[in-house]
Length: 326
Image 1 (tube, rainbow, N blue to C red):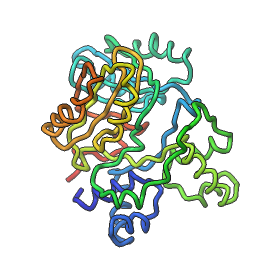
Image 2 (image 1 turned 60 degrees about the horizontal axis):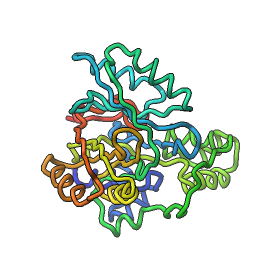
Image 3 (image 1 turned 45 degrees about the vertical axis):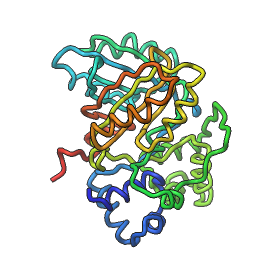
């Protein structure tokens, strides 16, 4: 991708359902140029527009992160087995003590027990797992965008901020569930197509989609491999944070433009942070200059992502990667 491609992808990440004209006005490009470039990237698989649930608040399940150690030579096999599970949202190969990192969404505590004690451990090659349950999410990957836009451009595209206090639980009606499934399949599906699929009026479709997004129950997402948009180093940081400073650290890190994901978890570490930067030197500056000043952080376990097998429920085969580019 050239500089303009990356800026347009960043704009689409800010507002995945924006029209080509709205993106063009925000970044100062003609609508035809925006449409031609983004439609090409989407058709080639370099960008996928989908949607994800706020699983805890909608009641769809409990997100957990797994560190998985495997026998030598079995990483690819175990990664594929995990990625093929419908309940896994992401699967990564990692440096460090764990060979694989995996995020999955369990429908219930009982199901989680079965998944951890019987299903994952039954995969040939799995030696040991460590589980961290998500307690609170400060930033999801759907809320992140590549850091290539000015504040003025962002202001043109950013949706209205959510209400100051969202309920811990806010279930979906049967109609909302059907709409959410259509958005997950195609995050840019037109209101007319939703209305036709579900036999409702276009104004009803528009109003229900707006409600789902405003209540943050469904988050539209434009996914691209970070390396394709110039961010070739991805890292997972597991932090130990003093409880009184957890909210401050989480909010502070979630606001940083290079933080793709940030959540409070149970287990040996209390905060997980995913970072995407252009170079190892930039990661070092993040570690020392951004993370270092937080006195509440008492320990950092830093691992690098060496390969993504699944992102946001999308298999790697559904996303264009560096190896596939000319």
